[in-house]
Image (cartoon, rainbow, N blue to C red; front, side, top):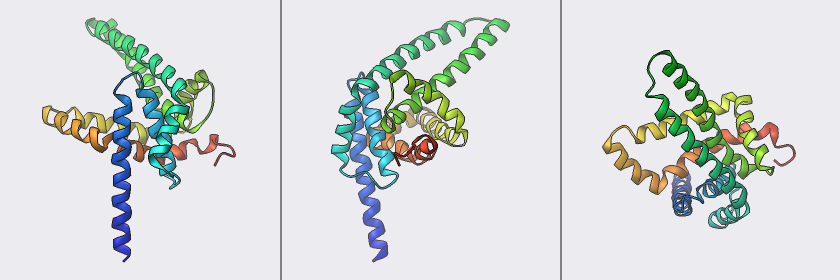
Length: 206
């Protein structure tokens, strides 16, 4: 009987993750809405990690609508910054000698800061209410203050991406996995760490 309950709960959770992943993919397809979709995904996942999720679809749609303006503004800024960093990397990589190495080192640090912002800003928007500039500032400050949670989140995210792009076979398999459950599964795993990361800053909200 206990085993039956465990199996039913596991299958129910698996179904929820697949459903959320499909919603995340569909709402990210216009590209411009990808930030709002990521925020909505984390809004549900942070509650799911504490078994407080309620209605999955309704929760996703409400979070998408509620945070659309702020998440989209942040996403567009990050797209522009990312494009600029990508162009800089392409240019500096052509330089030889010490100047080229120094330039790549500086760009490497900038890319790391950018990725930190990209990974943590949308969960922050999902969890807290604040101005856009403060959200972007806190997405850098909070992870570095809470390094013991930041590093595992960065590691899980990096490993997931690297394993996807190892070769042509992993890219094809990854396309299927990310389309079906990959994004939701990663967000779910990260959410346990993110809840602990955010606890000192949640005040009386928990």
